[in-house]
Amino acid sequence: MNLPNALAYSHVLLQDCIYPGATVVDATVGNGHDTLFLAQLVGPTGSVIGFDIQAAALARTQTQLTLTGQTDRVTLHHTGHQHVADYLTADTVVAAAIFNLGYLPGGDKATITHAETTLAAVQALLPHLPRGGRLVLVVYTGHPGGQAEATAVRDFCVHLPQKSYQVLQYGFINQVHQPPYLLAIEKR
Image (cartoon, rainbow, N blue to C red; front, side, top):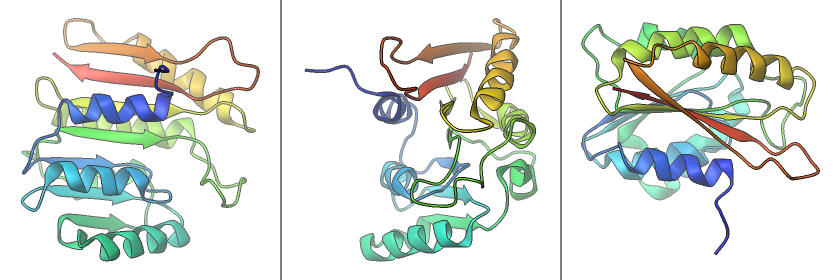
């Protein structure tokens, strides 16, 4: 049995803290794989709030949700994840959130996530996490702009107060290409 890659391990970490009826966030909907996974975990009484700046990504995800009968528990927003706070009330509890940083696979490689918007979203979500809630970032560095975003996000995570948060970094370090790695923030 092989160790899971960062993306597969993100699902393991999310599975541990998402429960039926939970509210969760997919900060980068992309092709909808995480959105569908989250929708299954929250069940028919839960809620997935998804964000993407690319209409094509949202359309693909909406098609998948329709085909799997999960449209009732997912709300998709055609805006950047930095606006997540606009879609949460002060008392919204977010059991978990996932970010897949970088660009849309199969899409325009010039349209990428950026440190400023990612960190704005992370900072907006952290107060909504309950104890044991997790925010998971799958970080890609092998594209222009990727390393700068990765450095900023990691620096932010390193400085989170240990009494309030645990931060895990997970990834392969002996591969020739630049595989993604994972940062997981868990509220204590």
